[in-house]
Length: 368
Image (cartoon, rainbow, N blue to C red):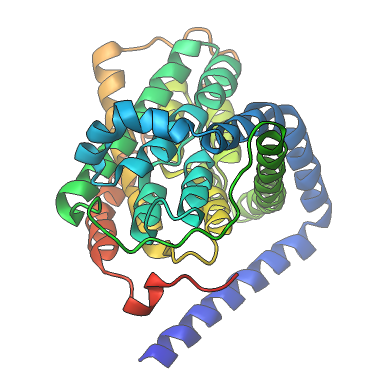
């Protein structure tokens, strides 16, 4: 049974790789345009909006800000999410600084022996979300022409993430009493200038990983768009595929193609799920530390469904006008809500999978 599951997994990966190769060969010029677009996105959006937050979050953790945050937020974080006080800082910094700061700081805390492996996994399930700068500035102001729309998307994303974390706490149990923590590996930060230089070095390493994934998926997204247009898929299906693949591309496609209210629903779902590109970024950061893929995908799909429900409630109760959205084009496409509500059921799968204990041998992390 195990050999069969491994062979099926490898076969699926090989088929996916061949499909990507087919897209690249069929649309070589489009693929190059996608890489250029990704480079522009890295330089104009990702670098100024993410890199400073990565440096500051690393520096705060290095200088002991985690202990300061734990003093004030440890009890509510432990009560809501069922994690130890040491997990408060990664969760709060992730909420303030955006993805993938939560997993980056949680991984550093795990490497220092401050949190357990299962805590690292639970944090990764719900604490990585788009930053306020991206949703308010790039999405709200630039695409919808109204920062209030971006603020609504940011709050919807945070509330949906919080609900997923609470759900995991209620049905997955508390991890705050766990003792299987990794011994410190000796890579402790220094103080002063040493802490600053090490923070920049770690932040740059994380940023380069994120940029590499963004470039690849920007290329694949452009090729996928050309392929979908060639087989004449409906615009909503194309946008759904793009958003599930890469967050920024999907949001831009929705906001510049669909009517404003439908685009808002898509953006809410994409912000909750965050896309396959971000998923692989998270697993690149936590590589070798036992974080599992299936619970993450299920939890993020469920968060996207919850975010969509919250977006429906926002549209129903607040009735935003979207009057200043000059870049949003009208479209008569039907609302995708009935289709996208289905992933909410996957939250049960995420809980079930996250409750499975790691093998006993996993209490000693593999050598890196």
